Length: 92
Image 1 (cartoon, rainbow, N blue to C red):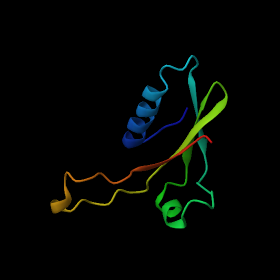
Image 2: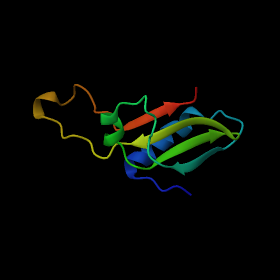
Image 3: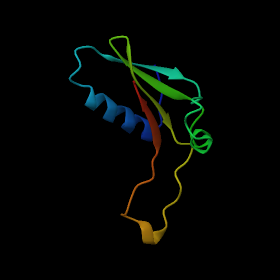
Protein backbone atom coordinates (compact mmCIF):
# COMPACT_ATOMS: atom_id res chain seq x y z
CA UNK A 1 0.00 0.00 0.00
CA UNK A 2 1.24 3.49 -0.87
CA UNK A 3 1.18 6.12 1.86
CA UNK A 4 0.79 9.71 0.64
CA UNK A 5 0.88 13.07 2.36
CA UNK A 6 -2.39 14.99 2.76
CA UNK A 7 -1.77 16.86 -0.51
CA UNK A 8 -0.83 13.61 -2.22
CA UNK A 9 -3.94 11.97 -0.86
CA UNK A 10 -6.11 14.72 -2.31
CA UNK A 11 -4.32 14.38 -5.65
CA UNK A 12 -4.79 10.61 -5.63
CA UNK A 13 -8.48 11.07 -4.76
CA UNK A 14 -8.86 13.42 -7.73
CA UNK A 15 -7.22 10.91 -10.07
CA UNK A 16 -9.44 8.12 -8.72
CA UNK A 17 -12.49 10.33 -9.26
CA UNK A 18 -11.46 10.78 -12.90
CA UNK A 19 -11.14 7.04 -13.46
CA UNK A 20 -14.07 6.00 -11.28
CA UNK A 21 -15.99 4.86 -14.33
CA UNK A 22 -13.28 2.33 -15.16
CA UNK A 23 -14.53 -1.28 -14.99
CA UNK A 24 -11.45 -2.35 -12.98
CA UNK A 25 -9.83 -1.10 -9.80
CA UNK A 26 -6.82 1.19 -10.29
CA UNK A 27 -3.44 0.07 -8.96
CA UNK A 28 -0.86 2.40 -7.37
CA UNK A 29 2.81 1.49 -7.17
CA UNK A 30 5.79 3.41 -5.84
CA UNK A 31 8.37 4.55 -8.39
CA UNK A 32 11.67 6.38 -8.19
CA UNK A 33 12.58 9.87 -9.31
CA UNK A 34 11.56 11.43 -12.61
CA UNK A 35 14.53 10.73 -14.89
CA UNK A 36 13.07 11.70 -18.27
CA UNK A 37 15.74 13.93 -19.86
CA UNK A 38 13.02 15.72 -21.88
CA UNK A 39 11.80 17.24 -18.57
CA UNK A 40 13.78 20.37 -17.59
CA UNK A 41 16.30 19.75 -14.83
CA UNK A 42 14.88 22.59 -12.72
CA UNK A 43 11.52 20.82 -12.67
CA UNK A 44 13.06 17.42 -11.88
CA UNK A 45 14.98 18.94 -8.96
CA UNK A 46 11.79 20.54 -7.56
CA UNK A 47 10.01 17.17 -7.31
CA UNK A 48 10.05 14.55 -4.57
CA UNK A 49 12.47 11.68 -5.28
CA UNK A 50 9.62 9.15 -5.16
CA UNK A 51 6.52 9.14 -7.31
CA UNK A 52 3.47 6.98 -7.91
CA UNK A 53 2.45 5.08 -11.06
CA UNK A 54 -1.26 4.57 -11.67
CA UNK A 55 -2.31 1.57 -13.75
CA UNK A 56 -5.76 0.51 -14.89
CA UNK A 57 -6.36 -3.13 -15.76
CA UNK A 58 -2.59 -3.65 -15.83
CA UNK A 59 -2.07 -0.82 -18.34
CA UNK A 60 -0.07 2.30 -17.54
CA UNK A 61 -2.31 5.35 -17.04
CA UNK A 62 -0.07 8.06 -15.54
CA UNK A 63 2.79 8.82 -13.16
CA UNK A 64 2.69 11.50 -10.44
CA UNK A 65 5.49 13.20 -8.50
CA UNK A 66 4.65 15.72 -5.78
CA UNK A 67 6.60 18.90 -5.36
CA UNK A 68 9.20 19.04 -2.54
CA UNK A 69 7.75 22.32 -1.30
CA UNK A 70 5.27 24.97 -2.37
CA UNK A 71 6.59 28.53 -2.42
CA UNK A 72 4.92 30.92 0.01
CA UNK A 73 2.39 33.29 -1.55
CA UNK A 74 2.97 37.02 -1.49
CA UNK A 75 0.02 38.93 -0.03
CA UNK A 76 -0.60 40.83 -3.27
CA UNK A 77 -0.74 37.66 -5.37
CA UNK A 78 -3.33 35.79 -3.28
CA UNK A 79 -6.28 34.59 -5.29
CA UNK A 80 -4.53 35.02 -8.66
CA UNK A 81 -3.14 31.53 -9.18
CA UNK A 82 -2.10 28.44 -7.29
CA UNK A 83 1.45 27.08 -7.65
CA UNK A 84 1.74 23.69 -9.27
CA UNK A 85 2.15 21.13 -6.51
CA UNK A 86 2.65 17.99 -8.60
CA UNK A 87 3.93 16.84 -11.98
CA UNK A 88 1.66 14.43 -13.84
CA UNK A 89 2.98 12.47 -16.82
CA UNK A 90 0.09 10.82 -18.68
CA UNK A 91 0.42 7.70 -20.80
CA UNK A 92 1.41 8.27 -24.40
